[in-house]
Amino acid sequence: MTVHPLVLFPDPRLRRVAEPAVLFDNALRTLATDLLDTLRAAPGIGITAPHIGVGLRVVVLDLPAGHTPQVYINPHILWQSETTEQNEEGSISMPGISASVTRPSTIKFRYTDLNGHGHDDEATGLRAVCLQHEIDQLDGVFWLQRLSSLRRSRLMARYKKMERG
Image 1 (cartoon, rainbow, N blue to C red):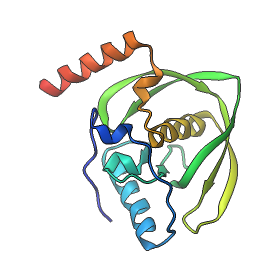
Image 2: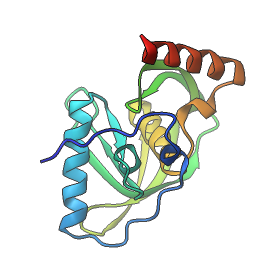
Image 3: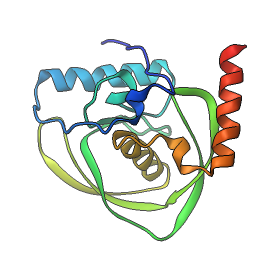
């Protein structure tokens, strides 16, 4: 439907905790469609409503390898494994920058679908990584905060240099 401009790092809106969605109406469905369109235009594999300046707890994932796009309203993690794995992460709000981040390899989570029905689910692999990354964003935690201060400083310097030239 509509491709929205992205909120770019270091915009303070990326550090705000998103509010729960409470109305499961056409406006929420339109937001989910707009998020998917914006994600595909970026391009990326995960987006939250705060990435387009909307402070609601909405996540859209569009994973590769034949997965259909998924919408998660008000997702939160119930459990995470002690087993971890490293994956390359980045953000559509900080294009061109990525780094290896360690996260739990399996999560159990709860979310609501676009019709207002609640679900409990489990995720592993890329889906688990993406959900953790996007739920962090909904909680006001930008992915760089998962890195050491030295790695974070180096990436921010590289990002600033890319922005200038």
